[in-house]
Figure 1 (tube, rainbow, N blue to C red):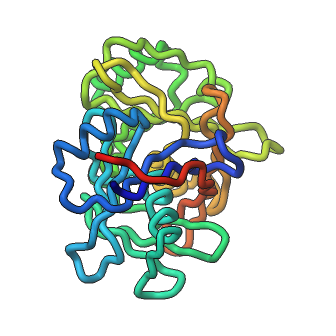
Figure 2 (cartoon, one colour):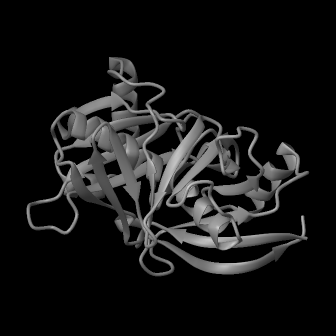
Length: 279
């Protein structure tokens, strides 16, 4: 029997953001068992808390989708840190948490009200090849004229970023659900008109079980790399709010703050389920 939690991330109230399942006592679970549990919960990600192997880290996390393990993901980072704290975790440095995961060490800040993680460096950046861009535009049902800019903005999952003409264009996308490869992780961003509470609308698509296109409600890793891409190009201010999940009936909100060379990504974490799991 292991301690278990479900939290809603990037939400101010339950059922508004992206759910995450967290196994607190994950020692002695094999990778195969972790993958089986993640397939069973069927959330976009399930995480497993472990003692760190790096002495600089406060804890270690492994992150699984229903079909694969990820080296990093944003809403699992915030949610896992919140659950670790709730279950007695004490960081080595007050107000600073260091998470060990597949990409290495990720720093989080805790101001007592909200957790924020530092966007990790991109593992892949630069332009998207013409053939790849044409294929993705077709999968999304877009026209080339709908795309303002494109780039690889991969910080772990494999994100390919597309900036569309505006937020309405992002919300209108209806992708082909069946022709996605296992490596198609696509993020869309478009600007809202001045006066909207959010600067941009974001959507995230990736291959789910059976290769069927799946939309993620709210995605920290994508918002982190979008911020690096667009703030770096001077296209967004140093501080802004992104909306995500609108097309799925959610009200996810991601707060982005550029502080020197670092970009911090934060959002609310709401505890929904506390208990134990027998696995």
